[in-house]
Image 1 (spheres, one colour):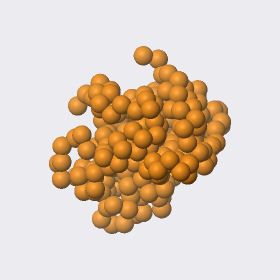
Image 2: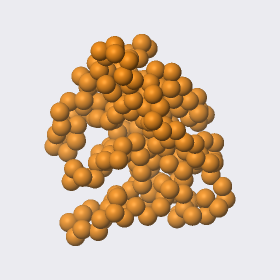
Image 3: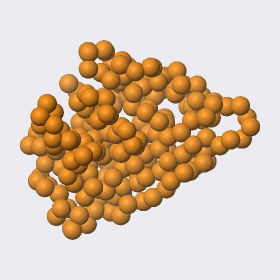
Image 4: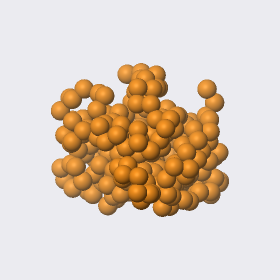
Length: 220
């Protein structure tokens, strides 16, 4: 399919704006020649990232449930798709720290959706030119873990979850516990996701979300 990021992203943000209180909203400008000139090894950038940068640029939106007295559970979420010059900046001190025991490949890891201060989704920028996205929480002492999605698939899942806080872990809970999968080192997020979105988002369908994820997963 063509890169229809705008449709899926705006569908999710429109629904979040209708149901919740927006706590942040910002649109980053489209990529320019000057933006691309700041990207080292432009030829390594996957087509999905380039298309997003050229047609959307970037988008930040955060939301929380209103205190409406309904008794429904409080919840929050959001997205922060960075502009291309931010994605491909040097992330020393946030992504990698230069410790001797650290995986040197972390120097090549770049955030794409900096959705939470403590965890985000990104990809490796190297000769492999892989579009595969990873979930990464630097403070947990583990390397980025594969979501088995590219940016196109990732954005297509947003209308199901509206960017619910740490929704990516609900995907990882569907994958086996291989000793590294971070979702199996934490309390399960899926019950809270199902409870909260089920209470606030009439169109939420967990089974459809899971089925769509399996349809969009990258081949091994």
